[in-house]
Length: 296
Image (cartoon, one colour):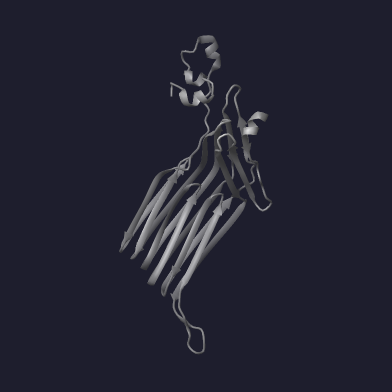
Protein backbone atom coordinates (compact mmCIF):
# COMPACT_ATOMS: atom_id res chain seq x y z
CA UNK A 1 0.00 0.00 0.00
CA UNK A 2 2.78 2.42 0.85
CA UNK A 3 4.61 1.76 -2.43
CA UNK A 4 1.48 2.32 -4.53
CA UNK A 5 0.68 5.60 -2.84
CA UNK A 6 4.09 6.97 -3.74
CA UNK A 7 3.20 6.47 -7.40
CA UNK A 8 -0.55 7.16 -7.44
CA UNK A 9 -1.55 10.39 -5.75
CA UNK A 10 -5.15 10.28 -4.53
CA UNK A 11 -7.09 13.38 -3.50
CA UNK A 12 -9.68 13.26 -0.73
CA UNK A 13 -13.20 14.32 0.16
CA UNK A 14 -14.09 17.97 0.72
CA UNK A 15 -17.38 19.20 2.20
CA UNK A 16 -18.79 22.56 3.27
CA UNK A 17 -21.47 23.70 5.67
CA UNK A 18 -23.51 25.46 2.97
CA UNK A 19 -23.97 22.33 0.90
CA UNK A 20 -22.06 19.26 -0.14
CA UNK A 21 -19.15 18.95 -2.51
CA UNK A 22 -16.13 16.83 -3.17
CA UNK A 23 -13.13 16.84 -5.44
CA UNK A 24 -11.37 13.57 -6.17
CA UNK A 25 -8.57 12.69 -8.51
CA UNK A 26 -5.85 10.27 -9.45
CA UNK A 27 -2.44 11.53 -10.61
CA UNK A 28 0.09 9.05 -11.93
CA UNK A 29 3.63 10.21 -11.28
CA UNK A 30 5.23 7.77 -13.74
CA UNK A 31 3.65 8.93 -17.03
CA UNK A 32 1.90 12.09 -15.89
CA UNK A 33 -1.62 10.82 -16.64
CA UNK A 34 -4.34 12.40 -14.52
CA UNK A 35 -8.08 12.17 -13.92
CA UNK A 36 -10.23 14.40 -11.67
CA UNK A 37 -13.87 14.94 -10.81
CA UNK A 38 -15.65 17.71 -8.91
CA UNK A 39 -19.23 17.42 -7.68
CA UNK A 40 -21.39 19.96 -5.86
CA UNK A 41 -24.95 19.71 -4.65
CA UNK A 42 -27.11 20.38 -1.60
CA UNK A 43 -30.41 19.53 0.01
CA UNK A 44 -32.63 21.91 -1.94
CA UNK A 45 -36.32 22.57 -2.41
CA UNK A 46 -37.28 25.24 -4.95
CA UNK A 47 -40.67 26.10 -6.45
CA UNK A 48 -41.37 28.92 -8.87
CA UNK A 49 -44.42 29.96 -10.85
CA UNK A 50 -45.03 33.17 -12.72
CA UNK A 51 -46.88 34.78 -15.58
CA UNK A 52 -46.42 37.90 -17.69
CA UNK A 53 -48.92 39.52 -20.04
CA UNK A 54 -48.81 42.96 -21.62
CA UNK A 55 -47.64 45.27 -24.37
CA UNK A 56 -43.97 46.09 -24.77
CA UNK A 57 -44.42 49.75 -25.66
CA UNK A 58 -42.40 53.00 -25.49
CA UNK A 59 -42.92 55.23 -22.50
CA UNK A 60 -42.26 58.93 -21.92
CA UNK A 61 -39.78 59.40 -19.06
CA UNK A 62 -39.16 63.19 -18.98
CA UNK A 63 -41.36 66.30 -19.12
CA UNK A 64 -39.56 67.24 -22.31
CA UNK A 65 -40.90 64.12 -23.97
CA UNK A 66 -37.89 61.82 -23.93
CA UNK A 67 -39.06 58.34 -24.91
CA UNK A 68 -37.55 55.16 -23.52
CA UNK A 69 -37.18 52.43 -26.13
CA UNK A 70 -39.24 49.43 -25.09
CA UNK A 71 -37.89 45.94 -24.48
CA UNK A 72 -38.42 42.89 -22.33
CA UNK A 73 -35.70 40.59 -21.00
CA UNK A 74 -35.73 37.56 -18.75
CA UNK A 75 -33.33 34.83 -17.66
CA UNK A 76 -33.05 31.78 -15.42
CA UNK A 77 -30.07 29.68 -14.29
CA UNK A 78 -30.47 26.52 -12.20
CA UNK A 79 -27.74 23.98 -11.43
CA UNK A 80 -27.74 21.20 -8.84
CA UNK A 81 -25.21 18.37 -9.19
CA UNK A 82 -24.83 19.03 -12.92
CA UNK A 83 -28.61 18.98 -13.51
CA UNK A 84 -29.03 22.31 -15.25
CA UNK A 85 -31.57 24.60 -16.88
CA UNK A 86 -30.72 27.90 -18.61
CA UNK A 87 -33.17 30.32 -20.22
CA UNK A 88 -32.71 33.66 -21.98
CA UNK A 89 -35.43 35.82 -23.59
CA UNK A 90 -35.21 39.31 -25.12
CA UNK A 91 -38.05 41.01 -27.00
CA UNK A 92 -38.60 44.39 -28.65
CA UNK A 93 -41.86 46.30 -29.07
CA UNK A 94 -44.88 44.05 -29.36
CA UNK A 95 -47.40 41.97 -27.45
CA UNK A 96 -45.94 39.41 -25.04
CA UNK A 97 -47.30 36.79 -22.65
CA UNK A 98 -45.71 33.86 -20.83
CA UNK A 99 -46.44 31.33 -18.10
CA UNK A 100 -43.77 29.32 -16.30
CA UNK A 101 -43.47 26.69 -13.55
CA UNK A 102 -40.18 25.31 -12.17
CA UNK A 103 -39.77 22.67 -9.45
CA UNK A 104 -36.37 21.54 -8.17
CA UNK A 105 -35.61 18.90 -5.53
CA UNK A 106 -32.12 17.76 -4.51
CA UNK A 107 -30.66 15.72 -1.66
CA UNK A 108 -27.03 15.53 -0.60
CA UNK A 109 -27.13 13.92 2.83
CA UNK A 110 -25.54 10.53 2.07
CA UNK A 111 -21.81 9.94 2.38
CA UNK A 112 -19.82 9.36 -0.79
CA UNK A 113 -18.22 5.93 -0.52
CA UNK A 114 -14.74 5.26 -1.86
CA UNK A 115 -13.11 1.86 -2.25
CA UNK A 116 -9.63 0.82 -3.37
CA UNK A 117 -8.96 -2.71 -4.64
CA UNK A 118 -5.65 -4.30 -5.67
CA UNK A 119 -5.65 -8.12 -5.88
CA UNK A 120 -2.57 -9.94 -4.61
CA UNK A 121 -0.03 -10.37 -7.38
CA UNK A 122 -1.72 -7.82 -9.63
CA UNK A 123 -0.45 -4.40 -10.70
CA UNK A 124 -3.96 -3.08 -11.30
CA UNK A 125 -5.73 -0.74 -8.88
CA UNK A 126 -9.51 -0.32 -9.09
CA UNK A 127 -10.86 2.81 -7.40
CA UNK A 128 -14.62 3.32 -7.11
CA UNK A 129 -16.85 6.15 -5.93
CA UNK A 130 -20.50 5.68 -5.01
CA UNK A 131 -22.53 8.89 -4.82
CA UNK A 132 -26.21 8.95 -3.89
CA UNK A 133 -27.18 12.62 -4.31
CA UNK A 134 -30.43 12.53 -6.36
CA UNK A 135 -31.89 15.51 -8.20
CA UNK A 136 -35.19 16.07 -10.00
CA UNK A 137 -35.94 19.20 -12.02
CA UNK A 138 -39.26 19.76 -13.80
CA UNK A 139 -40.03 22.91 -15.77
CA UNK A 140 -42.70 24.09 -18.18
CA UNK A 141 -42.99 27.37 -20.06
CA UNK A 142 -45.23 28.91 -22.71
CA UNK A 143 -44.52 32.06 -24.74
CA UNK A 144 -46.72 34.00 -27.16
CA UNK A 145 -45.28 37.03 -28.94
CA UNK A 146 -46.19 39.27 -31.86
CA UNK A 147 -44.03 42.31 -32.61
CA UNK A 148 -40.78 43.65 -34.03
CA UNK A 149 -38.37 40.94 -32.85
CA UNK A 150 -37.86 38.30 -30.17
CA UNK A 151 -34.93 36.02 -29.37
CA UNK A 152 -35.54 33.09 -27.07
CA UNK A 153 -33.00 30.44 -26.00
CA UNK A 154 -33.00 27.54 -23.58
CA UNK A 155 -30.80 24.59 -22.70
CA UNK A 156 -31.30 21.67 -20.33
CA UNK A 157 -28.31 19.57 -19.22
CA UNK A 158 -28.02 16.39 -17.20
CA UNK A 159 -24.54 15.06 -16.35
CA UNK A 160 -23.18 15.08 -19.89
CA UNK A 161 -26.45 15.00 -21.83
CA UNK A 162 -27.95 18.23 -23.15
CA UNK A 163 -30.88 19.41 -25.25
CA UNK A 164 -32.18 22.84 -26.17
CA UNK A 165 -33.55 25.29 -28.72
CA UNK A 166 -32.84 28.78 -30.07
CA UNK A 167 -35.55 30.94 -31.66
CA UNK A 168 -33.93 34.00 -33.20
CA UNK A 169 -35.19 37.08 -35.10
CA UNK A 170 -38.85 36.09 -34.85
CA UNK A 171 -41.69 38.53 -35.39
CA UNK A 172 -44.19 35.84 -34.36
CA UNK A 173 -43.38 33.16 -31.82
CA UNK A 174 -45.52 30.78 -29.84
CA UNK A 175 -43.83 28.03 -27.87
CA UNK A 176 -44.79 25.39 -25.31
CA UNK A 177 -41.94 23.49 -23.64
CA UNK A 178 -41.68 20.96 -20.83
CA UNK A 179 -38.49 19.57 -19.31
CA UNK A 180 -38.12 16.62 -16.92
CA UNK A 181 -34.61 15.90 -15.63
CA UNK A 182 -33.74 13.19 -13.13
CA UNK A 183 -30.47 12.06 -11.59
CA UNK A 184 -30.71 9.01 -9.31
CA UNK A 185 -27.08 8.30 -8.43
CA UNK A 186 -23.54 8.37 -9.79
CA UNK A 187 -20.82 5.70 -9.80
CA UNK A 188 -17.21 6.17 -10.85
CA UNK A 189 -14.66 3.46 -11.64
CA UNK A 190 -10.99 4.30 -12.23
CA UNK A 191 -8.57 1.53 -13.26
CA UNK A 192 -4.87 2.32 -12.98
CA UNK A 193 -1.45 0.79 -12.54
CA UNK A 194 1.73 2.26 -11.16
CA UNK A 195 2.62 3.19 -14.75
CA UNK A 196 -0.58 4.73 -16.15
CA UNK A 197 -4.29 5.34 -15.76
CA UNK A 198 -5.96 2.65 -17.87
CA UNK A 199 -9.56 3.90 -17.80
CA UNK A 200 -12.00 6.18 -16.00
CA UNK A 201 -15.76 5.67 -16.28
CA UNK A 202 -18.34 8.09 -14.92
CA UNK A 203 -21.69 6.30 -14.69
CA UNK A 204 -24.64 8.53 -13.70
CA UNK A 205 -28.08 6.95 -13.70
CA UNK A 206 -29.98 9.76 -15.41
CA UNK A 207 -33.05 10.57 -17.48
CA UNK A 208 -33.72 13.60 -19.71
CA UNK A 209 -37.05 14.42 -21.37
CA UNK A 210 -37.56 17.54 -23.50
CA UNK A 211 -40.87 18.23 -25.26
CA UNK A 212 -41.50 21.29 -27.43
CA UNK A 213 -44.25 22.60 -29.70
CA UNK A 214 -43.60 25.84 -31.55
CA UNK A 215 -44.69 28.26 -34.28
CA UNK A 216 -41.91 30.59 -35.48
CA UNK A 217 -41.26 33.02 -38.33
CA UNK A 218 -37.49 33.50 -38.05
CA UNK A 219 -34.69 31.05 -37.27
CA UNK A 220 -35.28 27.95 -35.15
CA UNK A 221 -32.28 25.87 -33.98
CA UNK A 222 -32.89 22.51 -32.28
CA UNK A 223 -30.10 20.39 -30.86
CA UNK A 224 -29.37 17.47 -28.56
CA UNK A 225 -26.32 15.55 -27.36
CA UNK A 226 -25.91 12.28 -25.47
CA UNK A 227 -22.64 11.01 -23.98
CA UNK A 228 -21.30 7.71 -22.69
CA UNK A 229 -19.36 6.87 -19.52
CA UNK A 230 -16.10 8.23 -21.00
CA UNK A 231 -17.68 11.57 -21.97
CA UNK A 232 -17.69 10.66 -25.66
CA UNK A 233 -20.64 11.85 -27.75
CA UNK A 234 -22.71 8.85 -28.89
CA UNK A 235 -25.81 10.66 -30.19
CA UNK A 236 -25.84 14.15 -31.67
CA UNK A 237 -28.44 16.17 -33.52
CA UNK A 238 -28.48 19.75 -34.85
CA UNK A 239 -31.25 21.20 -37.03
CA UNK A 240 -31.93 24.71 -38.34
CA UNK A 241 -35.19 26.04 -39.78
CA UNK A 242 -35.35 29.49 -41.40
CA UNK A 243 -38.82 30.72 -42.30
CA UNK A 244 -42.31 30.04 -41.04
CA UNK A 245 -42.54 26.63 -39.33
CA UNK A 246 -44.70 24.64 -36.95
CA UNK A 247 -42.44 22.22 -35.09
CA UNK A 248 -43.25 19.41 -32.67
CA UNK A 249 -40.37 17.56 -31.05
CA UNK A 250 -39.94 15.19 -28.08
CA UNK A 251 -36.55 13.88 -27.02
CA UNK A 252 -35.97 11.24 -24.34
CA UNK A 253 -32.49 10.17 -23.23
CA UNK A 254 -31.68 7.67 -20.50
CA UNK A 255 -28.56 6.11 -19.04
CA UNK A 256 -28.93 3.36 -16.43
CA UNK A 257 -25.97 1.88 -14.57
CA UNK A 258 -26.35 -1.48 -12.84
CA UNK A 259 -23.60 -3.09 -10.81
CA UNK A 260 -23.92 -6.83 -11.30
CA UNK A 261 -21.31 -9.39 -10.26
CA UNK A 262 -21.35 -12.89 -11.74
CA UNK A 263 -20.62 -15.46 -9.05
CA UNK A 264 -18.78 -18.68 -9.86
CA UNK A 265 -19.65 -21.95 -8.13
CA UNK A 266 -16.14 -22.76 -6.95
CA UNK A 267 -17.27 -25.93 -5.17
CA UNK A 268 -18.38 -27.63 -8.39
CA UNK A 269 -14.87 -27.11 -9.74
CA UNK A 270 -13.44 -29.00 -6.80
CA UNK A 271 -15.98 -31.81 -6.88
CA UNK A 272 -17.20 -32.25 -10.41
CA UNK A 273 -14.56 -30.69 -12.62
CA UNK A 274 -14.39 -27.42 -14.58
CA UNK A 275 -16.30 -28.40 -17.72
CA UNK A 276 -19.26 -26.15 -16.92
CA UNK A 277 -17.27 -23.07 -15.89
CA UNK A 278 -16.15 -20.32 -18.24
CA UNK A 279 -12.33 -20.27 -18.05
CA UNK A 280 -12.39 -16.46 -18.25
CA UNK A 281 -14.17 -16.40 -14.88
CA UNK A 282 -11.27 -18.32 -13.35
CA UNK A 283 -8.50 -16.13 -14.77
CA UNK A 284 -6.68 -13.71 -12.48
CA UNK A 285 -7.80 -10.11 -12.77
CA UNK A 286 -4.38 -8.76 -13.63
CA UNK A 287 -3.50 -6.63 -16.64
CA UNK A 288 -3.29 -9.71 -18.87
CA UNK A 289 -6.85 -10.70 -17.83
CA UNK A 290 -8.18 -7.34 -19.00
CA UNK A 291 -6.52 -7.31 -22.41
CA UNK A 292 -5.56 -10.88 -23.38
CA UNK A 293 -8.47 -13.15 -22.41
CA UNK A 294 -9.09 -15.37 -25.41
CA UNK A 295 -12.64 -16.06 -24.28
CA UNK A 296 -13.87 -12.47 -24.70
